[in-house]
Image 1: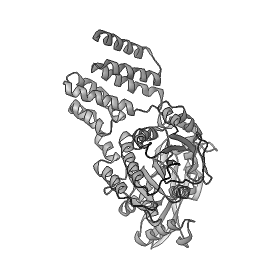
Image 2: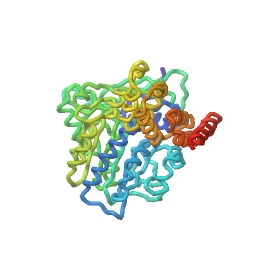
Image 3: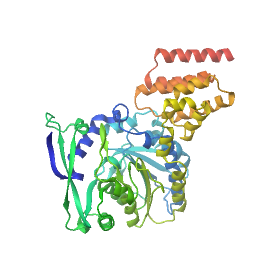
Image 4: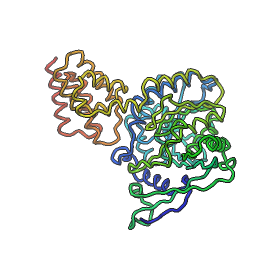
Length: 479
């Protein structure tokens, strides 16, 4: 192995440069062909849950200037799938609470992809959607690319939506040893013969090791006073713990706290630790590699950030480290209904719990009835991905379905098609399959519409043209 970095602060490591290079190289293909995870952060269930919390927050904001929008910032919006699903839920609020949903990313190509996407086009045209370049260490005002607005402060509170964002940006590493805090440093090696220039392919092969060095004065470690306060608490309460600290996340929170004049709602979800017990168990960082990489986030520290800034930070009562959720509020006001909405949503069904519930083997799917499969998809707010997974079994079971179940199928299929957000032309095959189900359910008019939609995604090939011709033939026969 060839060492490329020795004894560097974790937040300053070369691994974060590799991360940036990876996303710059991939563009939208990160979520289509490169295997970067997206499901837990971009599914219809979490969009519905977050939108319900946002609605409660809008209703409880004590002072809103109706002449200015409420800005919602989706940090690291990726493919744009979550933005599309969120906007579907939020649009009924627009007349009462004019808002602008701002998708952000550090990759210019992703912004071009959003602006050309047919699912997002109506929202851009209405002025309810905008986009901006943003990286977590940004300090200059935010420039909105569609409206041309330059934001250095907002009149109204803002909403931050951060899903699979905090776990992809720099963090620091510490250890408590003899009630004294030590900073973690990383050394990185790559295989012999690797190129001399930074190469995102190193992510899959690099080897890392850690060393720890005493800190003289914890109270002055960061420029941010509340960050040092949290570190001091950990040093006093978590002897023997090795823990991650979300320094990059706090930079983003501080940026938007200042932008919003300390009036904001955060909704976030990543792999992460939500309690001191989870932090104690976690230990040294585990780098999850998937073309890019992600590292679990210390959500307990993020909740403390809100509390130490006279705000509210709340986490699920039964957190799952595979996908932790947080809500945080800064600013004057009473937010009982917002808090209640968050806990009700997380108590009923967390996104990670739905993911566990639907991760069925083919054998398990075979044993379920068609109605059970359709209800499972509906439970996820008409989840296209699971409908795609179950397509083969759903189609087979449809042959023996009664009229009531066929009606349910048509409802679920249409809901899934409405929630579908294509990232790659090959995904048009899923839409075509949904048209096949509607055709076999004898809803020929709806099937024809869905086949046309599939053609707009993947191109109108011979199979789709034949399917459309069959729909027209069946519709003529019914007249």
